[in-house]
Image (cartoon, rainbow, N blue to C red; front, side, top):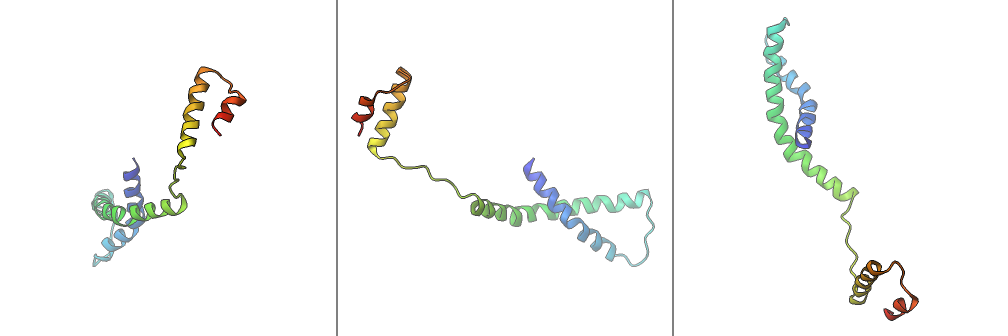
Length: 110
């Protein structure tokens, strides 16, 4: 649903301008009844979607990616030394065998 949400939001933002463009094209006054509302609503809807899709893809998505990188930078995993990796593996194995480690087990890793 996220891509359609972005496209419809952009269509919502630009629909006023497209309606203004449609109405500025007319030479005379307008009378609104059922068929004329449909006559203006459907083309406006289609033009909003046709214009909204490229705007969402070209402008909004890259800006959201940049915003995500700035506000939430990717976390780097800590790099362990060989001794630390061995200790982590040993603790994992020992914790499966028994719930407690002795002081001798801990001293043997130092």
